[in-house]
Length: 229
Image 1 (tube, rainbow, N blue to C red):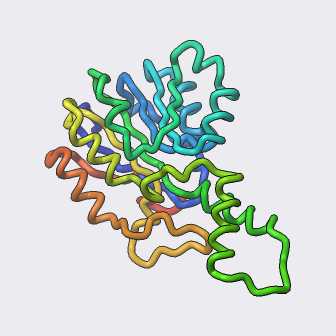
Image 2: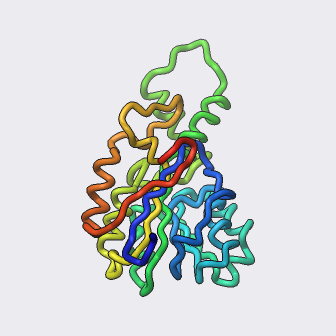
């Protein structure tokens, strides 16, 4: 059912990283695999090990994750099979503009790593008997993030709409395959005890953006943690 002009939205549960072991990329293969949000490299490794793609391109805003990934996958990087880019994926357009064949996109960039580090940083901060001022909290929080994160250049906690806009402007936009993770997080009533990156997004807004790319996209869902997730 998937052709070069078809569209797949593949949304999974909010737990990260997703389980790529049971996900078959073969029906969605194109020459290139472009993902946003490298995290620890699970998606890139799945794409590389499948042997389906000429090159895997991953855009990651966090410098620490990029440094780890370049070391962990140094052989893949050296051979050119993996191109790991340190950038905000809101700038996706400049990383795909020279690709002249259909692309399989996996869009999964969001602020989970920042929030995870923020919680860890709070745990590291010694308790004080004196009530902190708002200015003191902001200063401590800023210092903690500067120590642990280099995501501070990110334009938003989840650049999904900017990524879709970049795809819309690509010359082959109607021929691409687009996979989007975390559908459940964008549905009404979803909540999470520590994460908020999806706020301001909705499934309806995302679907409208996809129809702007190609009104003829066929949109369907793959089971994740729950059916049609």
